Amino acid sequence: MKKQTNDEYYKHLHELQALDFVLVELTLYLDTHPNDVQAIQQFNQFTQMRQQVAANYEAKYGPLLQYGHSYSRLPWQWSEDPWPWQV
Image (cartoon, rainbow, N blue to C red):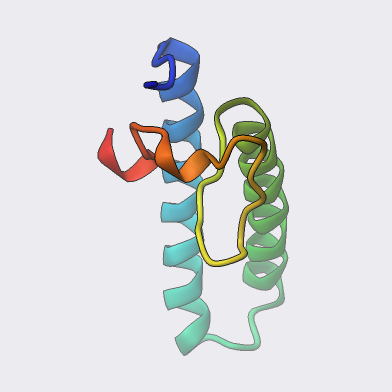
């Protein structure tokens, strides 16, 4: 059975992708500027935001990550599609 795909589903995925982009960019910056307190604070702020958005996504649509990084409800949700990386 396919997950219902609607505007809200894509909105959540887009928000996660935007937060992931910011976190990757901040990580790259911090690799060369490890003592930038403001950048570290921004990284931690965006990390918290991403965790909240991911938790909301997973509560509505199922797990984002495998190998123990995300919980699954009953029945096992990894057999459902589309998976987040397929849309």
